[in-house]
Each structure stands twice: as C-alpha cells, then as structure tokens.
Length: 106
Image 1 (cartoon, rainbow, N blue to C red):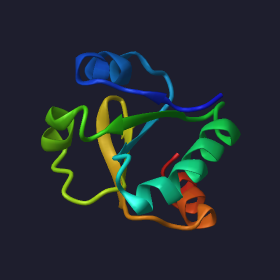
Image 2 (image 1 turned 60 degrees about the horizontal axis):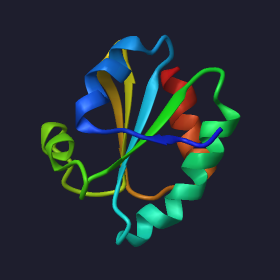
Image 3 (image 1 turned 45 degrees about the horizontal axis):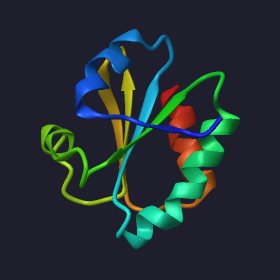
Image 4 (image 1 turned 30 degrees about the horizontal axis):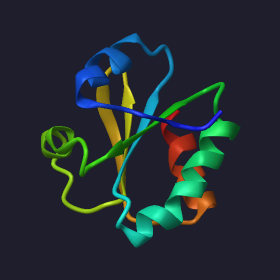
C-alpha cells in the first residue's frame, strides 16, 4: 500500500482519526533529495503498514501546512502520535537510518 497525499483540509481529521502514528513526508517534485528519499518512504509505508500510516505533503501544493510546521528544508519527515508531532527528521537518509529512528519512536 503506497503512501497517500495529504491536504490542508483533511490534515487535522486524518491525524485525529488515526489509531496508529502518522509519518508525514513534506516534499516537492523539484527537490532532488526528496525524489531520492521517495522510494524509501514508499517501502517503509508498505513494510510498516501494520504499525504506521504514511502520508505525503507536497509543500508547493500545501504551503499552509509547510508554514504551520515550519518546514524550511525538504525533505522533512514528521512523526505524529495522538495528533501531535513527536519526532522530526530532515534530509535524505539511508533506509536503515530512517527505520532505526522510526523504531525508536514507535
């Protein structure tokens, strides 16, 4: 199951209604590191689907969300639990490092 885009309009309700932690990938199509990390995020979405919901937020299409969470560098991944941000990761990273950071938070 691939990660799903998330919009400003549905953001709060998606976070509030999720029984699992939600990982939001803030990215843009023109961003090289974002394109490099994208397949890794998709793999994690599939492999950790029982424990984690993954959504993608295009910062060009959803600038209000990027502003709300003070996204100044992309890719930025924010893990939310109970609707609140609990961990932020910035930049491209190897899959093993990303998984290790997520595992420490789940």
